[in-house]
Length: 370
Ligand SMILES: Nc1ncnc2c1ncn2[C@@H]1O[C@H](COP(=O)(O)OP(=O)(O)O)[C@@H](O)[C@H]1O
Ligand SMILES: [Mg+2]
Image 1 (tube, rainbow, N blue to C red):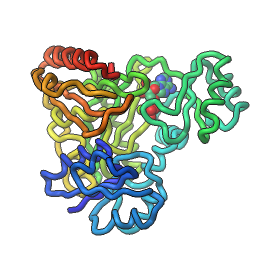
Image 2 (image 1 turned 120 degrees about the horizontal axis):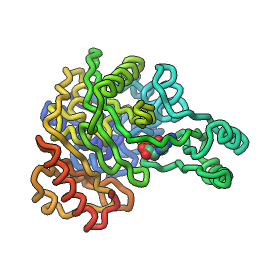
Image 3 (image 1 turned 180 degrees about the vertical axis):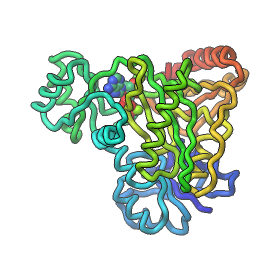
């Protein structure tokens, strides 16, 4: 079976690394010729609105998926007329617009932070009156890793906020949630409708970028896991989904508030490569290829540290017991995700000890992750 992947970043690369043992082959589409998935599969480069390039990519594929959230939905719908596309384009459409995404959660009865659509300075001033401060002003589209958003803490920051973001398309204002912690759930749904969930993971962001995930999230009441799975199930069923999907939540006063969803494999699921019976990448590939899902059961405890901007010496990382190194084959640039280290062990204490050591290496080497 030949799988096409829209986007050729590290997520696509890890999809291919999981899919080859199942007998699948991979072709990627990206706008840049040095996309790192090109090191492990065919890479077609071009613009998503170039019908010829997209058509060359689709030639001979059995199924198409995506690893990048901002693929133009029109291009995906066009492709879907020719080759089956999973997850369905509707999932992409919802996830690309923070306002549509919040409305979607509301329709399913999933709580979110209070929010308002913003299309003028007046609207922003009115929304601040109603939602209160601090609040977070975000572009509705194309934000990632904390880009395209700023916190408004005082009335004097309203105008500068509008000046900064107002010319970048429509915006959304959200109440600032003083959360106890951030968690995410990863759901997998097969083409036959079978669903599976990984345990809730606790996430730490540094400057808006995910720096660390711990699996399972410590001290999770059984009820919280069940609620997250209920929310996950209603999302994937409403979308008639196939593939892996992540939902990020704030935990506030012990309750889950949905922040955003990602219709793809997710950084907070990287631990599953070593830490689960079947990784998120393998389950995504299985799902979109119409194969049975694999068990999501955990193999011990795990933590992931992202390598952002710079990478420590590989042999130093590998000398740490229980540490596993994943480099993405990308050239270093400040703020860029270059790889991750997973620590996995049967004991939480061992995981913590190894995480300390990995962190020390990252710090010593000047990486910006922690
Ligand atoms: N309404 C909010 N209240 C508090 N913190 C927020 C809020 N929105 C975003 N953040 C912080 O910023 C991070 C990135 O925001 P998010 O909306 O998830 O955008 P991105 O697409 O960049 O991941 C969140 O994980 C959280 O730490
Ligand atoms: Mg996020």
